[in-house]
Length: 238
Image (cartoon, rainbow, N blue to C red; front, side, top):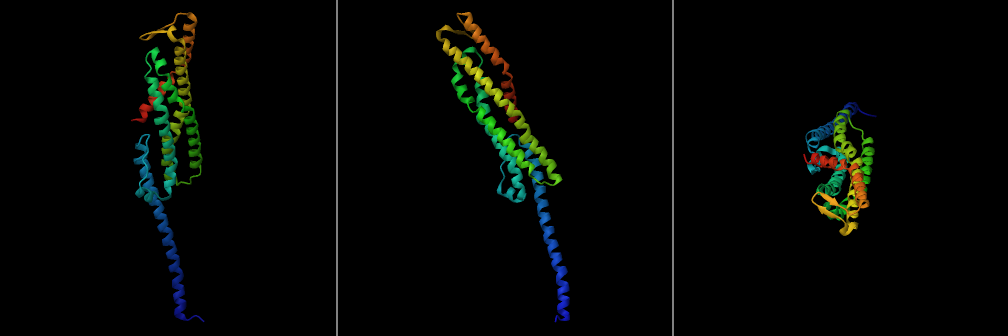
């Protein structure tokens, strides 16, 4: 049989344990709130001002953000894919195309352009796959409303907008590159039957001239892709 003092101790123990559990839950809640606040501040004041190249997280930041590190990994991973597409795929092609100023340049730069543009089709597929993965991962997130509002804005800037700009541009730039290479191949095939005089090209027969003019007409249909790519590169450097 329990004595009187023991009953008093048990009555005191029950509310004490309940209070202890409440304090534990409150402590966990405060930790998550601090992590969320730190992550929101990082998104607003660092990521949104970082341009195209997002920073990687330091060990200290990983500790401060807690589970929200995985939320950042979604947009950071996609950003890495975009940077690769721009630096290794888009920029070399733009550099080659921008260097063509005379008809003879079609001939002299065709091999280097052929090599530079070879990866554009693969890069477009990679960007599409990365965008699909980022969208799927984002859909699984359960974020508090204050974070979700900020994160959605960052996701639009880092993922949606670059993807919408790149995915139609890369195939168009690939087509333009192929047209330019084809023009260079045609001029190569003419051998000594073609002559260059500054910005002019001359052929001995009308059939040759007509074939060349057809190539130039096809090329001009996708010429705006180069301007769009140049603007994209310029904006990514700001």
